Length: 271
Image (cartoon, rainbow, N blue to C red; front, side, top):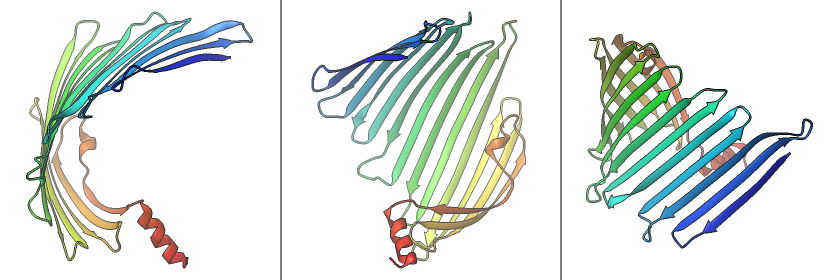
């Protein structure tokens, strides 16, 4: 049997508070299975340029308790710059364990209003997980896209990850992996044909590295449909990063699922 109570309270025009209480009971054994309490709050500024939220959830079971918390804030610093931050914490203290997981990410998006052809996105994330071992990870990324003209787009990316693992016996190991990537995309023939070229370099702190280049040719037979063929060539190897690059040729088919697709199907069926 599940029993619950939910409350929503609009404190003012900008802030909303919520609370949920849930209790689960096994009627066959006449024992409580779990009890959960969740609290939340949402806020936005008067001009809607800033928003925030916070959540707290705790569950009690016979085997122990679990806790979850989250807080986030996002807003426009200027018409060109938007920022975002979020942090999450999860604790699992069931069956005599003490597992912890914490993640925090901050990011920013930049697109100048006077020249919207440029787009820049940057973020950093910190992860801390403690179960049998302690793992701390730092990740970062910087992406930029620039429309040189209505047919040519350039893109670049720099990303990295630093991870440190510590065992209960005091043994630790750390590794840093970084990536550089650049490419271009060109459309021609009344936007029915497109060509893409990209190159990437991946390396780690142990001296391992990998390089990759790729090219793609695409054809748009009808609006919302893309047929493309491409080829990637990679050399070198970086441990545990093999899924980032693949060798060989590939065939790609993309279909835009919007209302125009149904109009095309109706036309094909004679409706």
